[in-house]
Structures are given as C-alpha cells and as structure tokens.
Amino acid sequence: MFAEQIRLIRCEYDYEQREYRRATEQRGVAAMARRGDCWSSVQIGRAYYNALDRLVVEVERREDTGREHNFEYGRSVCFFDSDASGGLRYLDFACTVSYAETDRMVVTLPGEEALARLRALQRPAVQVHFDATTYRLMLDALRAVAEAKGDRLAHLRDVCHTATPAAFSAKPAVPVALPWLNASQQQAVGDVLRAKDVLIVHGPPGTGKTTTLVEAISEVLRREPQVLVCAQSNTAVDWISSLLADRGIEVLRIGNPTRVTDAMLSHTYERRFEAHADYPQLWQIRRTIRALYAQPRKSRSEGFHQKVARLRERADVLELQIRQALFDGCRVVACTLSGAANPVLTGHRFHTLFIDEAAQALEAACWIAMRRADRVIFAGDHCQLPPTVKSPEAMRGGLARTLMEQLAERKPEVVRLLTVQYRMCEALMQFPSQWFYGGRLTADASVHHRSILDDIDEPLVWVSSSEAAADEDEHSEDRSGMSLINAGEAALTLRVLRAYAHRIGLDRLMQERIDFAVISPYRAQVSLLRRLISHDAYLRPLRRAITVNTVDAFQGQERDVVVISMVRANASGTIGFLSDLRRMNVAMTRARTKLIIIGDAPTLTRHRFYRELYTRCRVVGEVIEPGGETT
Image 1 (cartoon, helix red, strand yellow):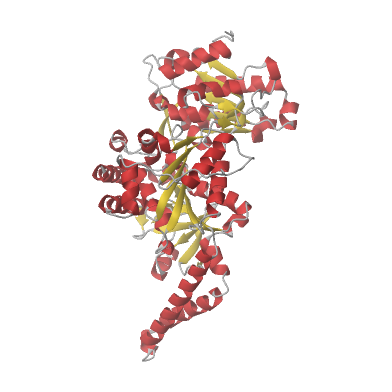
Image 2 (cartoon, rainbow, N blue to C red; image 1 turned 30 degrees about the vertical axis):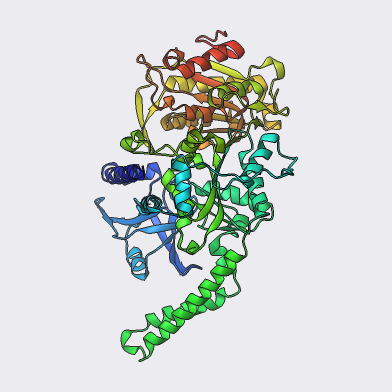
C-alpha cells in the first residue's frame, strides 16, 4: 500500500525533474520569462540578517515589470549570469524565496560567500529552481507511517486504510447550539467534537464550508488548549488564519505568507519573534558572534572559540525561550502541510489537526502534518479540483486520489455533507446537485429565486458555437506549455458577453456592481479572450467587473454571471481533460444568477455528462443554436 505510494511519489519527482531540465535547456531565458519562471534582469539590493538569523537579500525585477510570475514563498530559486553572446552561467547554489511581490522579492541565501558571488554577477538574473524538499518530506512521512507500530500514527493509518472503524464519543445530552448555522452545519460541528479519529466536512460549492470550519475550530478550542490548522497552499492557510484572527483567536502562522495584509503578517512566526522583548538581546549576541568571526584569524585571541561557544549557548537559550513563549501564547498554529515539518515545530504535538482544502492535497502531504496529531478533521470537496499531478504514469497509478476521497468512499460514516447552499439560484444548482451530490443540495430561501432580470431571463443557457468554431486543434504556447485555442468561439464569446451586458444596461451593471467571470479550461484561450475584451470599446467601462481566467484559478470564487468557453470542436469528438468532470463542476458552480455555456454541441454531447447538461438547458433553460435561433 505505502510502497506503491512511495513509488508514485518518486515517479512524480523524476518526471518533474526531467521536465524542469528539458524546459530550461530548450525554451531559453525569454520563454521562461514569458512563463513567469524567470526574471531575466534583476538588481541585487540590500542584504541583511532577518529575525531568524538567516541572511537574506532583496531582488528587484528590472524588465517586464508587472508581468505575472511564479515566484512565491518557499520556492527554490537559482541565479545566473549571461555574457554578450547569450551564454548562461549558473551559480552552483540554490536559494529560497522568503517574500515576493509583483516586481520585488526577498531571498534567503546559504551564506556570506553566496552573497559575494551574487554581487559579482555582471548581468544577474533569477529563475525558479527545481526543489526536492517537499518530495523528501513526503517520502519521509510515508516511510514513518508504514513503519509505525502501536501508536496513534499507526492507529490513524489503520483507520484510513483498513477495516478498523473510526470511533466517536457518545452524543451529548444537550447538543451544541449554534443557531446562526443551518442544521447540516450544526451537525458537522457537533460531530467534529465527537470524532476520536477522523471526520470529513464535505462542503459543496456555496455551502459555507469555511464558515463551518471556523466554528468547529472555535468550539474545539473551548475544550482544547491548542490546535494545528493546515492546508495545501499558502493562500488557503492565510485565508482561514485571517478569519480565525478576526474572531480574536491568537494565531501563530508558521511560514511567511507570500502576499498578505500587514495585519496578517503580524501573526507570522518571524514577525512575532522579532517583536518579542528578548529579541534585541538575542540580536546583539548574534551580531557579536558575526563580528568575532569577521576578525582576521591571526588577530583572534586565545580564548576565541570558548567565547564564541558561550555566546552561542546563550543565544540558543534565548531563542528557545522566545520560541516557547510564542507557542504558549497562541491557540492556533497554522501552516501548509509541508510546513508542518518546519524545525520550529520540533517536539510539538497536537490533539486535533484540521486540514482545509484536503481534496486538493496529495495523501503523502497530509501524512506530514498527521504525524503531529492524535485525530484529524478533513474539510473540502473531492467533487471539485483534485491535486496537480504532472506525471502521466503517476496519474494512472492513482497518485491524484486523495486520502479524503478514499476515506469518503471507504468509510461514508465519517462524512458530514453540508446540504444548504447560499450561492446559486435553484435553477443553476439542480444539475450539479443531481450529478455530483446525489440530489441532496437545497438552495437557501435567500438565493432560491436569485435573478438579475427577474422572470424574463433564463439562468441556464447553452450557446452553440458549431458555426463560429473552426476545428480547435490550433496549438499556442503559453506559460504552461502547449495549449488549445478556438478563435471563432472566442469571438462568439465576446459577442455573447456584449449582448448580455447591453440587455442589462451598462448603467445598471455599474451601479449594482454586477460582476462577470469569463472562464476557459485552456490558458491559450484565456489569453486570447483577455486580449479581445481589453480592446473592446463597448466593454471598456466594465473591465474591472470582468475577470477572465482558467477554471483552476476560479476555485473558491463566485460571480453574478459566468460565461464558459469550452474550446473543443472536432470531428472525432475528442474533449481531452474536459472529461475530468470535477473541473466542469468548479466552472459551473461559480455563478450566482446566470450561467452561459458556449460550446460545440456535436463534439461535447458525445459524452454523457455534456449530453445531459445540454438536454437540461433545452428543457428548463435556453439553447441558442447557430444563427441565433432559440430552442
């Protein structure tokens, strides 16, 4: 069982390493810069030791400013120089991003020698570097779980992967009363308190999963001194951390968030460490140690090493005291799943671990954090986007099959489905509810009849692109490599968007702040749609209200009106990864009031899902055939 997981993780590691090398060698600096993996010209700025005594340097981008990039907290990067002929010379050390903005980042260096070599570069540049750290942590966690015997880790493993039942305490005589939650949310919170091993809070789109999770954490903290809260991404950790902090709960954020407000930054371990009353004394001791080492060897006194040893011992004691004070003063420790292996957490154990967005996390990543806990609460929706797996072999082997998904299928008794949704009107909710959630969702009364144009507008519309869409097998290279584009359908999408905006009226759209999402599964199509919309004079007043992006980028978001360009149009009926219906679930469920699907019906309806969706549009919504005919 775990041997296969280890094999698949290694397979994914090998694939990503090979692809990184291939991309670096074949694409060149300009292509990497377009993909957001490289800043081709940078200025090396101020260097200093941060609160954790790590040498960092500021790096500022000088070209292509404002372009999106992939540098973020925790990413490994490497620096290189180029000569007049375009030849590249890489420095033989890797660094880590400590903080990143649009055109500036702070990078942790391995030492003073690395800084000197960096400053000596004539034309410095920086690129994302392949980092094996997360893979090493996942492999270590899997080995530890496989070898565990007679402890809580072994028990959690058996509950998750064998017939060992998940235990619950008896129901209290007086259930938890949280009248601001609906019945399914209250049941989920109550069962979080009762679960002894594992529980899944399954939150379909718009059902208040995060709200329920925050209440569950608050209730657990009434009974426990401290909990660990994790998620796969820094963004998800920051979001739940900010909500908890707004409730007045003391949060200690391990790992410096990439782009957060100053209020959230003040909860980070590094900022709290620096603000501690004993930090100036520790900083002075460290400064003295560096000054001693800066002395020429010949001028060092006879007791040099003893003096340094005493200073180091004193610094270690102070650092441990500050660290202990920070952990003693918080109720929630928050970090990414891989961040749970941070050395500052050494020796810390938690009774309860909450994993948010668990359906987007590899099983191996979950075990990194689960090694520190007695029980775990998963929250997410395995009917939405799965984890990213790049290796075809690892994908075929089931690496993307998450621990939460396996538990939901193997032990449905630990799943608590949130059933009342507050986003979509009833007409938009019915199809995803039937297909993905067994028809168990209901629309809250506040959104049941939600509409922009009241009874004269159909919430669900399919616009057939059969005549507008040439064969889409036109490939375009974008940040993610080769992608698909359908120029005819993109032009049709723009016309549909203009027509609906005109029908509502620009004045009303701006006064009521009605917003739009234009979504496509393919990055190249997204890029084309962005260009078309940005150059459209009629839509110019609405540019801030229209967001154009991929399906993946919209998970967790919502808009009043959603327009989806499906792209695929071919005689063979090939739909590629549109057959991953979880991606379509995400796209469809972003809409509050109206969903417009633009796609080639003859291609898409060969698949049962799209055939039933098309039929539903025809029966309870609207289908606009080529030429504008409505059926």
